[in-house]
Each structure stands twice: as structure tokens, then as C-alpha cells.
Amino acid sequence: MHTSLDKHSNEIYCTQNLYSGDSRPLYFIIDPPHLVKTVRNCIANSFSHRKTRKLWKINEFLSWQVLERLYDITKGNKFMEAKLTKAHVKLTSFSCMTVLLATQVLSASVANSIEANSSHESLEKLDTSELVKLIRLMNRFFDCMNGKEDFQEETAEGNGYELRNPDLAAYKSVDDPRFEFLENTFLNYFEDWKQDVLKRPGIYTESERSRMIISHQSLESLTITVKGFVGATKYMLGVVQAPKINARSFNQDPLEQYFGKMRRMLGDNRQPRVQSFLHARLNERAQSSASIETCKGNTTVERRKGLKVDSTPLPSRKKPKTAKTSSD
Image (cartoon, rainbow, N blue to C red; front, side):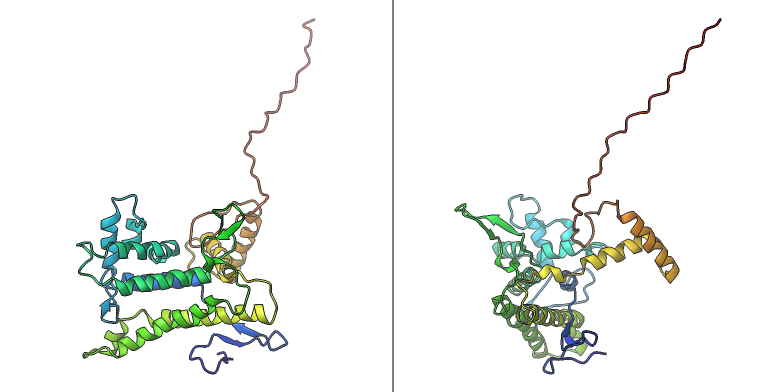
């Protein structure tokens, strides 16, 4: 459908924008938070849940049972770094679609907790090092692709503010070291994983080998997103001369919020026609001027500023006095 501008890439992540009137490229990006969710789901189905995968890398299995047992170890201890709940490890059809639970599982605190408890009798017979490495990579990938400059805290010296995590900072240079991590360290990990699976000794069918790694859709989406994001950010910084780029600006939360509203307003209408969609759109437009955004769902709500709802009761209207008439 599209002609790639990068002839050396197997994935099409950029093409010429035919409607720009110049040589401006068009980059493709899949929503990074949802990629974290798809990777989490692949791990969750490895030796657990649907059991459709048996993830394997460098002579180690990557099993969801590690997280299930970590939950059993830490659920009674309020001082553990990783505060996993049942919703994190016992996935349902709803929680499988929840991005927040996925990012909390694939986090540095969970990786640290696995390492700290790896000698526990419940975990000592399970492989953990490759799983920890994957969790750390996905955690940093999410930080690099979802950063925002308001994640700041006051320094210990009291002389200003600094980012709690430098990966959350805005991009200001085409030589930012995070580009090196995303294009090389991160993507090469999955390329090496594919080679490890292909070279694994033993007689395995193509289908069996495909279940030793995350889904090919996730692999392709990660590659397209990283290359598309890096290309678009470098173009904005180098060619357009933008002062800075916040990675979170690339997410699809506004689109998801809009179509989520449309889905709710259409109710059980699974096949809406143009007329019904336009009717729902007009209703949403009329209601949105006074409605309050919900804090639930898979999106980060941008709270509307300046809208105050006053619930003070209105004063009751006094009854008009009637003139008295004499009986005479």
C-alpha cells in the first residue's frame, strides 16, 4: 500500500506524504502503551492462562508462573517493593485489555522483587534472569516512549527541580542516547531472541518454534513503532528545528477517548450506520460542553481547566403577599 523511504528495512515505518506538497515524510507509530499490553499478554499465556506459548531464550523459559508465585510470596507483606494484586496476575477478559495493569507488571519494581526473591523456595526451580531482563527492557521502552516533562521533584539540596527518571525527559537533541537504546539495545534483543529460537537444538515444528517467542504481530509492531518514533522525533528536532519533543504527544488517547464515547452512546448497536453515528456525534458535542471527564479506562484524561460546577441550592422563591380585604 505504501512505498517505504527506508529501502534497508523489512518493515514499512515511513513513506512520502503525498499531500504535503514537499518531500516531508510520513511516519507510522502504534500506540506504545498498547504494545506493552500485548507483550504482557504473551508472557501471561506462557505456561499459564491459555498456555498458548512456551517462551524460551538462551536456555531459559520465561514463565508467567514466576509472577504468580511472586504474588503469593509478597501479598502478605506491605513493605515489599512490588505490590502485585490478584488483578495483576489472574487475568480476566477485562484485565487483559487494561494497559495500567500491564505497565505495573512490566516495571522496574517487579524486576527488582523477582531478583530479591529468586532464592525463595517457590522460585528457586524456575528460570528468572531472562524474564527480569525482558521486564527491564519493556519498562525502559515504555518510559522512553511515554515521557512527559511534568514528572519532576525538588532536589535534595533545595536548589531546583530535576526529573525522577531521565528517560521521561523531553527529547531536545538528535544525539539523545535514548535513540541508541531504542534502535539498538531494545530491537536487537528481540532480533537475538528470534535467532536463539531458530538455532535451538532439537526437532521442533515451525509452529512450536513460533510459540517460543512473543507473537510476530507484536515483534513487527515494536519495530515499526521504534523506527517510526525515532525517525519522526529526529525529523522534528533536526529539520523542523523544534525546541523539544514530548514522547507522550504521540499517543492515541484523544482518539480512543472519542471513539469510546461513541461506543457508549451507541449502546448495543454493533453495526452503526452513518446516520446513527452522526446522531451520536451531535449528542456528544452538545453534552461535552458541560460534562465531566471520567478518570477510568485505558487513557490518561486531560482534565478540563476552568470548569467549576456549583451545587449550592438555589434560594426558594418567596410567595407574593396577598392584600387583606375588610369583611365590611
